[in-house]
Each structure stands twice: as structure tokens, then as C-alpha cells.
Image 1 (cartoon, one colour):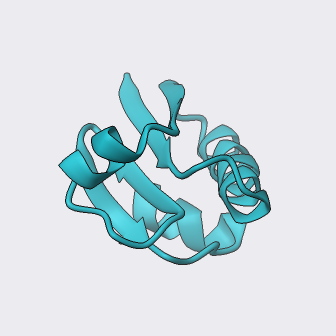
Image 2 (cartoon, helix red, strand yellow; image 1 turned 45 degrees about the horizontal axis):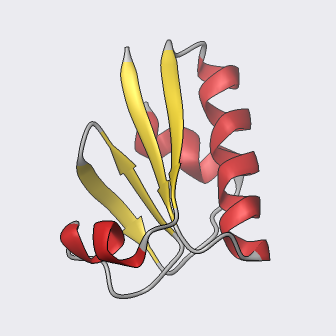
Length: 77
């Protein structure tokens, strides 16, 4: 099971990234658990300075962007 983490303060872009990521993971049929991390200290602990960010299994894969579900599928695939 993949652990997908959305790093952000809960803004509209963060929510859109969560929605697009969920759609991409569902499209790929990935077994996953999604967690939203809104605490700034935790976000900075990942080395992220620009939100929203996407991390999978503790590794940050993108920051500061809201890619389409199709683009996220390429990242997750």
C-alpha cells in the first residue's frame, strides 16, 4: 500500500491537488492511504518551502504545482 501525502495549509490549490491525486490513484487502481498534512513544521520537515506538495511513501515528488490527474498518474505509475 502506498502512503500518499498532500502537504499544504488547506488552501484551494491544496484541495485541488488532493482531488486530482485521488482521481489519478483510483484510475491506476493503486492500493493507497491518503493523508493531508497541514502543520507547517511537519511540511518544513519534508524540506518543502512551496505548497502544495505531493509526497509518496515519505518522498516528495512535486512542489508548488497542481498537475492534472493524467500528469499525476505518470508520477505515481
